[in-house]
Length: 484
Image 1 (cartoon, rainbow, N blue to C red):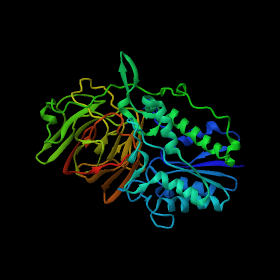
Image 2 (spheres, rainbow, N blue to C red):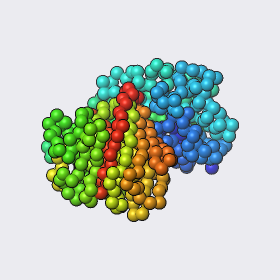
Image 3 (cartoon, rainbow, N blue to C red):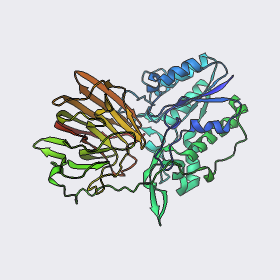
Image 4 (tube, rainbow, N blue to C red):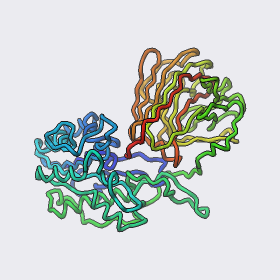
């Protein structure tokens, strides 16, 4: 039986956004609402390009699943244009016969395979990024120093005599008709209170990723364009109706939290939180106490972080820890690294230490039981009942995700580690060198930006009867990050 196979990046893929006001959706998810009598197999993955996708298990699934009579819809471009990331970059300036070209990558890795299996390939130009000024030019329409990615897709389709669908300009037309309401096609992470009523916070709009309504619009446009050219896939389309704003509903799992960027100039830390500029010391979250037994402070050129008393923990639903950190403009690439030594540890569970990247930070906590279980990425160690995990993260308020790097015991006093967290666009690389072994983790399109409008925060953390000394602390800023 014929099926539709969707391949592409985050604009096509599914998401698991628990905390968003209007969660992210890819148009590959919503295409199923416009078809009947055919399966839609969405293999798209966030953060991948036509080049990097071939390294994923989903690519192998494509190779195994594609067969005669299938339709293969391909939507890449957003990450192929990342010239600062060699693992994902392909050039739209080069032709189909040139190594490193976008066209060659699309043809060799997807189109030729579909044709060889007697399946029907359909290629789509990348959807535009939101432009509230409605100029829609340059990076917003995927034109940069590496070429015109929309044109590359359509030229390739014409050259191969296959269907090429212009989702760039068709979505621009819809967006311009909607005028100020065009932002309601996009994911929005935060809420705000207006006259006591919680509504969406337009400052947190995601200019790349669609919400349910936006994804439904793009799926509708894709189906409409294919129907216009009387493509063979059209026989599976239902009667097409334009999406309505009534299709857009608030995420039922959304929980409103008031947050604003801390006033760093007004912060007057206690001695236990005094750090050399540009670092700040604090402790927040689910703590047993709030007093000077918790430290996050400078010690000459080093930092001491943690406490000898039992406070804070990391588990499925709550976090509490000391944190010596610095702020970074959320649009910048960076690498943050440090050497860590355990100066004190009492061998208890749900404790940890290391480096942390997060999208929010808090000063002057007054309630020791406040819960700040927001998203973060951590390089270092966290303990459970009897074992330790190297590197971990939180991607929604009710789940702590541990990387599958397991040590069958707790860490010990005087042990030493080297840790780094590096951001390159929408990819974060974490490396922890511990007991003569390197543990590496990669996070793609991880949502750590949804809380703070201005900054991300990187720093050193410890909790639960752990004190760690961090030395050789380095922060390298590596230019502006390219948009998703």
